[in-house]
Image (cartoon, rainbow, N blue to C red; front, top):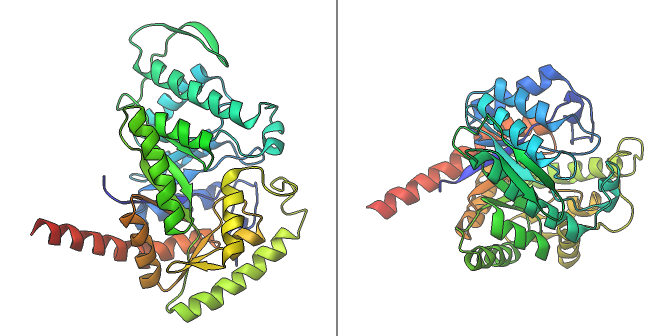
Length: 365
């Protein structure tokens, strides 16, 4: 598969600035401008994130699809919120609207506190079991030529059929996480498996674990999606100066309880991915070529929070290091989201693609 780039849309202009603020507003003009910038800049995919306090992801994904021609929305979705038969129909409809561009990202949920905000009181292991069953139902409905029934641990229905089907028969499904439950469901069910940016050694180990699960299940290896928050400037020195300015803003935001009131969880993170990032940060602030863990510490590893810091050339080389260990979906999202996305498109994407094209030509010769 080709190496592709992922961004993430922000729905509020207030989220752009010296560093991205956690906001829940919806500004259609800003979102339209953001989506078109990704489309024009050559990004292949964009995540439409999910949180209990954020704008409805289905509607945001439809908006993005309607106002773009090429970029593929990746819709983040929690199985505990929408019954799977309805989700299958809604997703197929959205895939039709986007002319087959939709990808689904299943979020089992890493925080009990956040899950309970929407009435989900299952434990983490049960949430992953539910995700496994949910994915099976989605594919069953999409592929059905007549009414289907299902009786499982978490869902039960009889005689369901949807007239609308995905453009290509199925919608690619992504699963992410760093727990054994995540590896199991992702390896057995995922077309894509998502990881947060860890050092190369740890990333390679996780990829091997997921691939081993896929092998045992007799499935193809999922594509690997790895996420970073790059901080770039014309030189490495200037990039590090910018990085520490950004870190100061992140620390200020972390202390602003009003700004982060919907997104804050208490104590050490419950999800393994965040725990791993914090443990890696304890071992060192900078890893490999330019992986920086200080933002993870400042934000309590809330989401993808490690940075790649340097000139476009340095960051491009770092991304290629991850390609070399098996990552072919590179998510790069900045702390000044729209402006950073434009800069990545101008200065980073071309360098990575140029080197990959050179490698392909050399190998073919």
